[in-house]
Length: 582
Image (tube, rainbow, N blue to C red; front, side, top):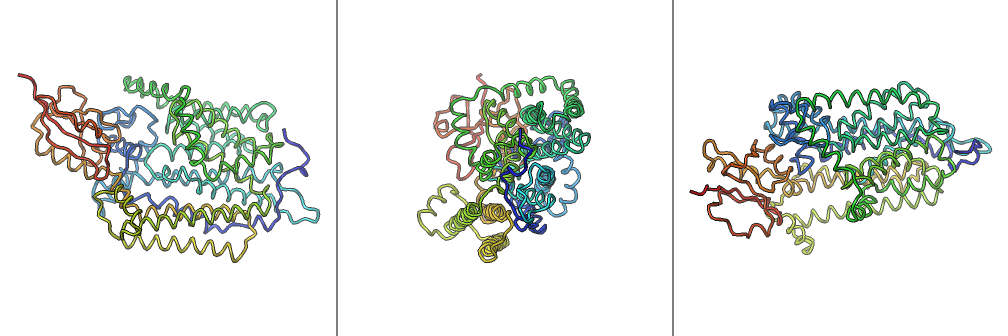
């Protein structure tokens, strides 16, 4: 429990330090963040292209594909149908208009990514208002100054909300994930919505409980039990007896009923119309949990600090500085959701970025509450670190691009050439102009920090968000053609489609050997290549490793086609025809 004596609060802040951050800056940061890298590129394996494949399969009219996500005839029995529903709707609504300007495939790709803007808007708005509700409460207020001058509750809450929003934008690990057509953007948005809902329950319990039920149900439809359990556990921890939400525990029944109704309204028809799909989904959900292996633990220790940078050090600092206030809502609620996400992460059999992403929102909120407890010297040190770190990353991106285009410096150019073998380097002047403008904006932001010495406590988070945004913008402009070449299956899929048009006889089907779901989805998306599960198909599409490619063919097997992505040294595809023994 926390002390009722507000003079013991660790927060120290003046009214000038809670100065209002220009709304235009927040708007520009948000728009550049979500639009950079979202369009004008191919879907990449695995989650990105698989999400698009389920949308196109549903729109093709295949039986129950809206209810039970499919990749062609392959049951995509994992996650949930929410991303397929929303993305499929936008493709259906926007593709006819976009086809006036783009090819049907590119129109579908563009339309499928419009929901990412909505998920990002939901994430940022829910995170901002949730932090604002917590920050304006009396328990979170800074120490009252002897002669006045401390910020008002509204200004203080707004400053913390702005900082939390900038911190979520500055979180390194979710940057790419927020731009792919997968369940992760929807999952992070539901996480923010749930945290806002619990904060809302402190003063409007009914509306907060309804919103919480919708958030948990949405997380379930986005990613099943691995997506909804962190929210359920976080809510249960938040409403423990004698906690700040103990009096509102009865309203959680409404949340449970709404969430259960959403789950059952999908699950009952799914099990009725697709018993095999439903059984496979249950098996996936069961295998998602288990005692992690040593390799998984090492992976968490290696990847999670990078994924949650720069919020996790500040979040831990907030817990230390507010260690006597764990019962206060502004610490108790985000800590509850962080613990819920951490428990599910540690109970995941193969944890990776979708599991890591559930920690992003509570860490950003906790990190925001660390800021008013920092001394001015520490804040200035963090500002300088952000300036140096992101100036270095931006310069590195530019140097690599120069090496790609000119061959200088020679060693860097040679390393890049090995990774982009076959890529025709060229200067795209519109993208280069945008990259130059973004770099100049970063220089202007640093110059503003050095010359004006702003008192606003959000200045460090503005630098971190601006620095990451600059780096991401440079990657999404200067490097997008090369990245698209390296990671897209468009060319190899077109080559396979040409080979099938040449060699496939009437009535012949194609089965696969060792083909991954991402590759299967890519061939379906780019050239509508349907792959069968019939073991009698005479044509076999094989995915080979470098070692397998050298294995002699058996008698009766003839090679019709071989292909791979240009720079990939480890992945190769081969189409063969198997002639039955006489």
